[in-house]
Length: 236
Image 1 (tube, rainbow, N blue to C red):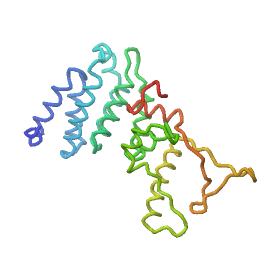
Image 2: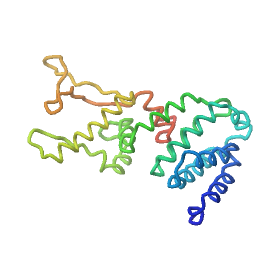
Image 3: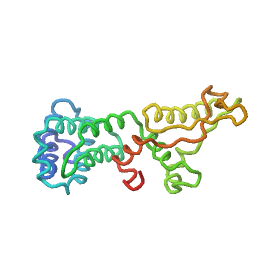
């Protein structure tokens, strides 16, 4: 890999050879993308993605690809995934992208439009928001302790009150923005807290927004989590 980093042509050839067995069109498409629109500094990211994709789809029968390799919508989906992967900084993000592609393929069909939508949604989320989305799949106090412990630095609630210092206020605002973004994308649904005496929603004096008692993932949120590999079908 070290030697490949210094030679663009060798890199393209190597990636094409490694991918062509499982993805017959990948080598040619990758070569075109690298030469046309992907800067040299992103080649390493794309190489890692192609290897990740190959691992995930290596068990899919060849006849499935024989049917799909002439499907223009499918080629467009793969091309889009390459472009997105070239911008992915973390290994986790590349795994999410590869999982969406691999999970969109079955022996009988490929849900191209569904996979495109999920890729688009994934692009709009940062890694912290994905962790929060997974949190809301099991939002109970004692739920999913292993996941919460692993991501405690992100999932620890930051509460700002009147008189809180500026840093706390800013961190709380950012954390709330992650949750609001998930809601705007239709990935979680919040339950508004109702005042038992007045029967009207309670409001947060800091933000002016309705208070929520809890939030849960929506069907779309569950679908995204499953397709990127953060939950299995039995957890939906």
